[in-house]
Image 1 (cartoon, one colour):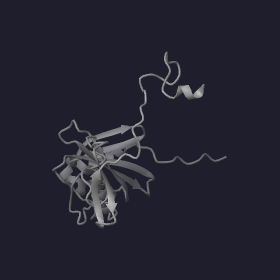
Image 2 (spheres, helix red, strand yellow):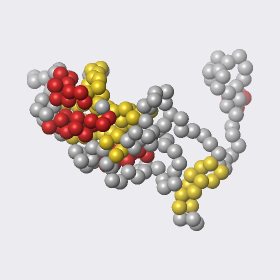
Image 3 (spheres, helix red, strand yellow):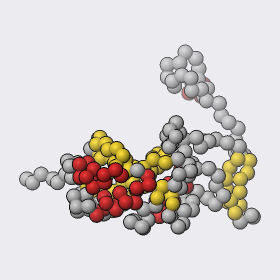
Amino acid sequence: MKAPAPAYAPNDGVIDTARAALGDLLVDTLDAHGEVTLTIARDGLVEAMTLLRDTPGLAYQQLMEIAGVDYPERPERFDVCYHLLSVTRNHRLRVRVLTDEVQPVPSVTGIWPVAGWLEREVYDMYGVLFSGNGDLRRILTDYGFRGHPQRKDFPLTGYVELRYSEEAKRVVYEPVKLAQDFRVFDFTSPWEGADYILPGDEKAQ
């Protein structure tokens, strides 16, 4: 019986080939958990992505995803991660650049038009700016939404809620109105084994 083909090609030689093609554009490399990650200088992103697409031995033809990661303790708090696929080599690659709330990341829409939607998502969720994207609008949150929900410092609770007002024909902020009183829960001990009766246990008698 013939053995099944591997899910993806091995990483052998990928970093060496990328280092030879990218030169000073390549800041750092990582091969961990079966995945290769290349850190690229932000200002050289478009040139690096073009080389990753067109260089023989790399040939990453497709952009599959762009994702954001927030590290608030860093001066450049955001990672912008690009997930590339080589159809001809059956290999995936992660490319990342670092930025902050002010410095824009060059748009790769000139290489992969699908990046327009993906960059809008990262902008909406994290507030990362992309220079060269001609339609950098919110894509997941409503019009008038304040803040960026995937940032680590985005408040999870507050005193206002967002909804669409049929009367005003727009999204409005209103004070939170609770449909019922807060229930009191005791999270200081496990459900079983406590040396006192937990609220609600009396109903099981």
